[in-house]
Image (cartoon, rainbow, N blue to C red; front, side, top):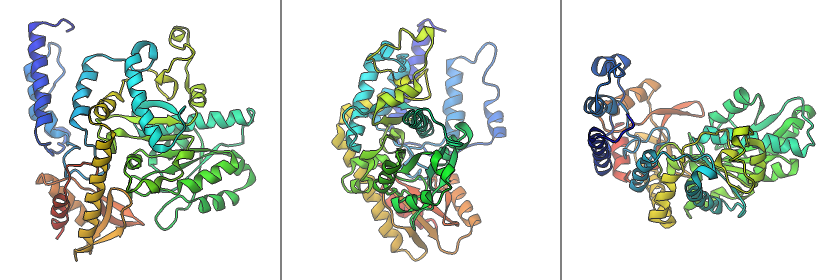
Length: 453
């Protein structure tokens, strides 16, 4: 298996050509299949003697691959899609082929240096100080969890080791579901839910009022507030500056979850929405969402990386050679040790194209979103439910029930027109388009809206 034989070379060249063909062609939408369908067409793929490279690749090309949707299709607008640049996707092949380990400076100094260059650009966009830094982790869920673990340890240190009866963190109903899950299930921390304003935003005024009304023992346990820079469902940016002011008054940690929307920092047309992010103690953004990198990649940044290192550095005899003072080990900044150098495809694309190209691409998606909102306002059969702040359109088909939306979504996918799913806003069933692909055009938006007639 490990020798580079003639068969291995032929297999590698075939795989490389397959990847090149995918990069060169239009992304197929494709659709899932049932377990029974896949069992009937693929059968047993793991056998004692193996299928051989030709048959294994055939199964992927003809059966298993088409059962996976392409999130970079221009009319894949459900959830938060992904649209990797060709440079990022191509370099991801190199990362896999070169067996890089990205957990320590000792083993991956060049990779870590490159990743830190990309992190530095993001920190600069957010207005964080020059000493800010962190690491690329698997996704927003791990980024949020790692930041909040560091937050608790930092606040505990400032309290001189005095623990409250219960720890607590302030969030809203629009905060990503992974945050509440991480707090309640993983960290055993209570959640203080702050009512959002009419747009669902966390504001400084509502945060202060909620906290002031808490019993003294509950208020004593609050150690952090999570502000969202672009909610997943609605694309709304919280009042980060207001939340920062309240957090500062109480000595809390401010964490800003920009997993989806943080990319908007690079777009001058919406930069004002993020005012206050420069006060964050920690901040995340997922390049695999709106920064054109392949899965999976979350940039986790700390205002003071020393605090994160104190919380996350693992100690063991076999790690003595790694834990060298002054070296930058990405595994010191998150809940991870073994680590793929997952920030490299993003770095390579930045290095190839320059940051101005990223600004242009993000502004393109914002322009398409605004044009889409105008089109919705001009149609009699749909109604815009929320003015878009970033690149999410939330609207209803007038008169439709949940079943109508479900049938429409299924029909679009079955006909390979697009992938859009229903959602809810203020308890009302509706739908949403998340536009993060610069190849998505106003014509694509009009086509999908027209299909609802």
